[in-house]
Image (cartoon, rainbow, N blue to C red; front, side, top):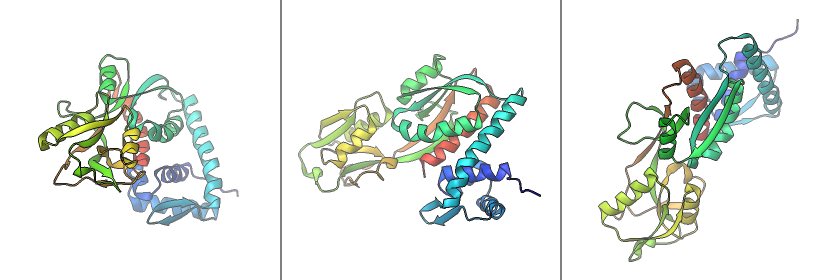
Length: 287
C-alpha cells in the first residue's frame, strides 16, 4: 500500500521553515514546542530522511528538506484552493492592508507567501506608509487592516510584537565629546522622531541635525557610517555596526509596540484569519 503524506505534518514543517526555529513556529501554530518537534520527527520517519539540522542558531534544511519544501508548498496551496472551491465560508474578495514603512520589505517577503497559502481567494492591496497616516486611512475607511506603532492615547488595540529603541552611535567615533551632538533624524510625522526629540530636550543635550530621511534604514546607515547618533529600533542593530550611546548623556527606556488595527466593517472571523497570517509573518520577522 502506498504511503500518504499528512497535510497537517506538512503545514507544521512549512511553519518551522518560515519561522526559522521550533519555538517561534510553535507560537504561530498554537502548539507546544515538544508537539511541533514530535510532528517533524513523524514527518521525517514518513519520508525516510532527515529534513532539518538544528543548532543554537536555529534550523537549516537538509537536501531532502529543500526538496520536500518545494512540494510541500504546492500541496498546501492545492489543499486550500480545493477547500475554497468547495466551501461557502472561504474568505474571498478585495481587502486592503497597511504596513509601516520601516518593516515593509522584510515583512512583505514573509507575509505575502503566508497570506497566499492560507487565504488564496483573497485579493490583497498593500499600502506602505507611516503608522500615523495608516491610522488616518483606517479611520476614513480607506484601509481595512493596518499594523501601526502603539501610542498611549490609543487603547484596546491587538498587540503583535515589540522591540526596544536604543540610542546608538558609530563604533569608531566619540561623537559625545562634540559641543553639539550630531543627529540623524527621521523627517516624517513619526512617533520615533517625537521620542528622539523628547529625550534630547529632557536631557538638555545640545544637538545639531546633520542627516534627515523618511526611511529608518537610511538613518541607521548614517550612524553606521560615523555621521551621527540616533534613536534606533533594536531589530536594525543586527545589520549594522554601532555601539550604545554613553548612558550619562542619553538613555532610553522606550519600547516600540506594534499593534493591529482594523476598520469596524471587518467581521471578527475575517479579522481572526488575517491576524493569524500577520502573526505568522511577524514571528519570522523577529527571528
